Image 1 (cartoon, rainbow, N blue to C red):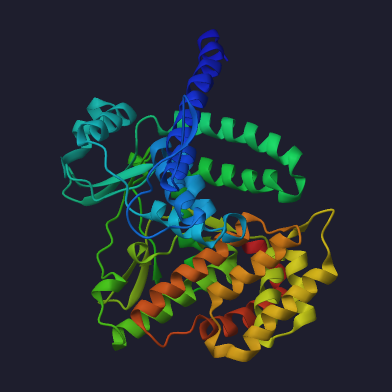
Image 2 (image 1 turned 120 degrees about the vertical axis):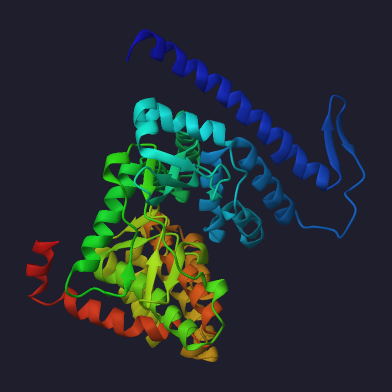
Length: 454
């Protein structure tokens, strides 16, 4: 590290920590208290008039103000908020619900800034040689990136995904500051397993900053899709290797119909529902490598070929063979309503703490399965059941790693897409044969040969 970098990093950390403190106090703490009728000023604590409207709970107000705080603080905190939105057992249902707004579209940056990044990454000469035209209006904008339609000199259309300026630097600083805070809180509250959760979050965020990693994801998805046992009705976009950098990826445009554009319960809708559900489940349980953000905007149905296409492959989840076996046991135990096997499988799925009480945990699982029994397997609300299981684990100091949360979130998201297409769609109906096949294959002697080929 040179002298300038050695000096500038600590200075940048100081300024950024002050900014974070100000925004949290201004929006997170002060905003929450003011909404509840309390204000902290120079003269101390005083009562103020509450905001007009219905009385809101502390959790609701806190969640809303946290969402505002994370948006103000930028990409890494938006990502952190998205993680918390997926963990209601940590922050409560009301806070998690309010934080889900962070998955929505964020304001775009100007085209001028996008063009500057393209020219910086490629150089002016290459930019002029390869680009014929770029649509100045963005196609989509996310916390880390922005996409634009472009026409290359040879007439082909591509989707340019460009990392927003300054993102890498600010995310790196934020991760250092968050890690410092996590280290302190982890020593004070070891039962929360904050370090394990942060390490998963950190690695996933850093991977999303490098579009060369996204290109590797595309290569791997396509390789899996070409293998003998995969679903040949699944498509992934190609990318331009010559235009790939850490901050730019030029992707093949996918032309198909979104879920919202297909007539509900039509033959096309039912096929799209089945293909999307089975594709995500096969990615998880066949390969342990799956699309971790399969919402309706990232799935397209290609009517001409009858295939389903996945886009935006920067966020992926990965499971080892043992991970898959453990979670298959959890899912099958839920379906069979096997109390002992579910308790044991979920206990092994997580990381027990020193104070974990298996007997108490088993009793909590019994109560959840009593509800499942009453409603019947076909009427199981997967999201509600999973949330209850995770809450029981959290209350008994059993940490569930984020890789499982990503997997479950993928299942829930694709279930939502399938229900939007086919109201009678059942993720469990699609899952059972895939889970069974995967479980049988994992114990097959032929699996040794298949493992070697991957």
